Image (cartoon, rainbow over the protein chains, first blue to last red):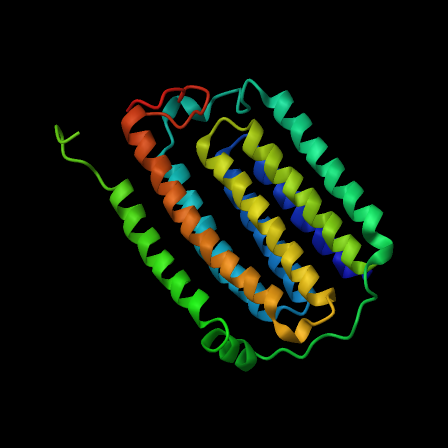
Length: 167
Length: 103
């Protein structure tokens, strides 16, 4: 376990905690982009350069900005000074999340002795990824293209203004 | 502790943080943020298993993660569009107040 793994994990988990704990929603969105960046750096640490850069492009560049836009569009004046940002059933949610983490951690630690020893980094070039996308994974690629088109059209239709009385 | 176990534990912790956010926040957008964190934890698992698995040259896990990132982007766009639409109809994004399905 290298020291950079611990630093990056601490950065990412701090960003994630901030994203769900902070009171101001805009601060949550900024903290979320810190978590996404930390995760992208962890991907780079795992020799997955393509996935790490895709993570930065898609999440930090698009999803985080989209979240900030949505927060600013839906912000109402009384909500800014609101004291209670957690739901009435927050204790049950917290207990559920802790239980899920306990089960996952128990499963990982129980099976840890069977994990394979770390091997040398696989030499993966972007050219290989491109050939795989155009060869073996061409059908999923086309389906994702269709899905993204459908999601784009759907999001625009859902979020556009309706005419008065057309409802 | 092997590196794979470390990455899996970090991913489990991130998943639990996202789940806690999705279950405890009142603002619908912050619930979506929690869901995004959970998706990212799954991606970290996929990449870690790809890197430390027996056949990393097959690229399967990394392709899975890349497609998962694309699907998550579509999910975020549609989800935030729905939140904006709800806000237009009900003038709130507080999930404790949105408790009926009739528009």
